[in-house]
Image (cartoon, rainbow, N blue to C red; front, side):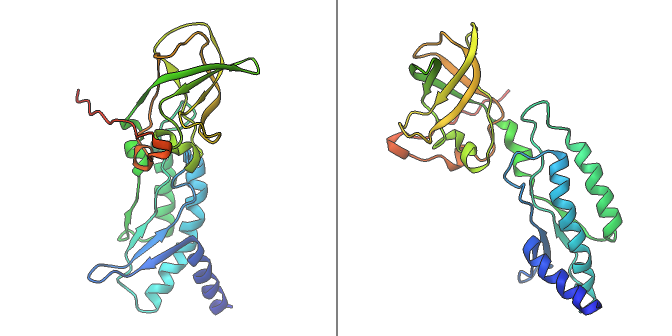
Length: 234
């Protein structure tokens, strides 16, 4: 039974994570999270990390029993929450959950590393876009802007993120749709965003907290270049 158990753990661990043994460096156990590139919350991040940690614990023990004493690094991956809106709870709540599991499952000499890319850079950038076309479709106000899912808003496709849009101009707000410039039906930023109904060509919209996985995956689809990046120091 013990042998079957360890074999089962090894097979399961192959699905959740891996152990890599780079030349000249200590082996590293990776806990992969399906939330790495998604808009995750502390609760969802913990729910995806905990099973990986629980599986990694016996995997570490079996590695040590088989003579791999140098396995001392645990990579828990990414998926840390970015403050996209008020529903995202603070990172400190997730840290409490993770630290509790680390203390319970692993000895104190384990080195734990993470990949908090989105958490670090999501708030580093805003995007400003210009309205290049307007229309009414089935009674709904529609705006066409000079950015879209093939550019800065690629996270809508790849990460299932939602980026609320805001207007620099105030006005009577109605539920509006906003599309990118490419004339591709997929180039839809939102079908339901409260915006002033009387905006015109040349007016500007903006979206906050779009620093992660946005400009990095922009394309030149249909001849439209990526947005220009401006660095503002203050």
